[in-house]
Image (cartoon, rainbow, N blue to C red):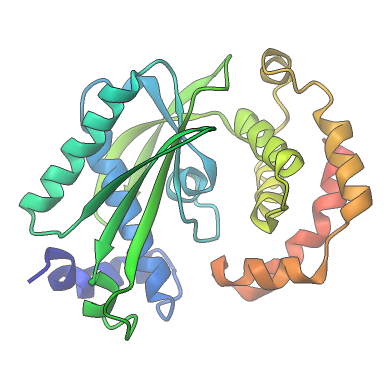
Length: 261
């Protein structure tokens, strides 16, 4: 039997302790696998040159109150071939634990990203009736940012505990707001995360903005917001990721937060 299937009742018990909505089993199993991967990855050598960033980092390390999908990393000087070897080492460990997992490498004009696929897991857990559906987790690594200030934060969930390298909240706020400005199709999660980061006391890191040539970030974000505002569809798109549906109202605070940044 798949090791994850056998342990699923215990995973759900951990989810209750984390105050996750138990009915959202798809989100719970994804978060468990994300936490397991990060735990196993940062237990390896050479990972000081890899900073765990993005929404999933905020969720696993800072308790952002929403589910997240991908694993994003800032590559601080690790050769791509070495990085992939580290990823593969983690997956080999999973296979020894009787976890069936597939590995894909995708090369595009904008760079290389990886994807973990777990076939039939959702079906075996009775989360889907489609036996062919695969649980997918994308791993993205970026080298375009510079001037990092990293810190080490303790991952502690689902029984996994490990020190993890991540960016400061101030730098994460810069990255989240930059994502909002640059995306051709706005993602409501970016707005939600900016509001949440501001509520945690984060401020835009001016030196980081200067180092990455985004000194007009405030003005660019406000200009986009004034044109786009917050369509009603944003709330509908965000709700599946939220633990409490009422928190979708935080989207309406985005404009006020922009004025304060």
